[in-house]
Image (cartoon, helix red, strand yellow):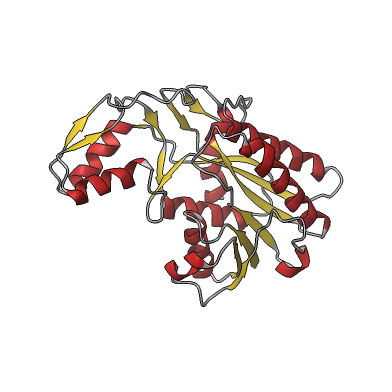
Length: 280
């Protein structure tokens, strides 16, 4: 299968491309710039295109005729409250994806987000009504709705994958675990964090990438699916396990940072639909 990957050199994208190649797929990798290409081992195994997909002049024909598209790009993260999510990225993404669908693309997998659920606590399943409270979550949910509307005129398979908390190699340097690793590497005695009582759903990036590839290999599925572990863990426990795995000796300054006002205290994903799709 020929798969077009948008955001190929990003945190999740680089692992998705690796997984696709390992499974024998042909990949056209797209990213805004080629600078990060030197960081990936697959740079000589794909067709790479450096371009800004949000530029109206971008020619959809330049990507060839892929069998499927995995869309992982979303500039501006982790600024979830920035209005640019709504005012710039949302319309640009919509027009780009619409252009590809009108050109004949029949299979589209898009990275959504658990932030579409808003402040709902507990185990979150796909049938819940989205209630985003951030511009980022609102933009993602709106993009999904726009794409569903396009399906009425240009039939195609739309797989909307709501990602939860992914961690691992290539993660943004300001994320929790990369911050902790830097403090350990620097030999600092204390790590400043929130109270750590939040329950979250964490998954290694390699596992996330594997699930995304298995979904793109399942073109009979159309709809929303949570990509998550299905198992809640407290942020404090996650940090303590990372400290133990690194044999580090460091104290936690709990409560130094306030809890985020746009995240509920305890939420995780229901992954039963994902497991059913993967196992079948």
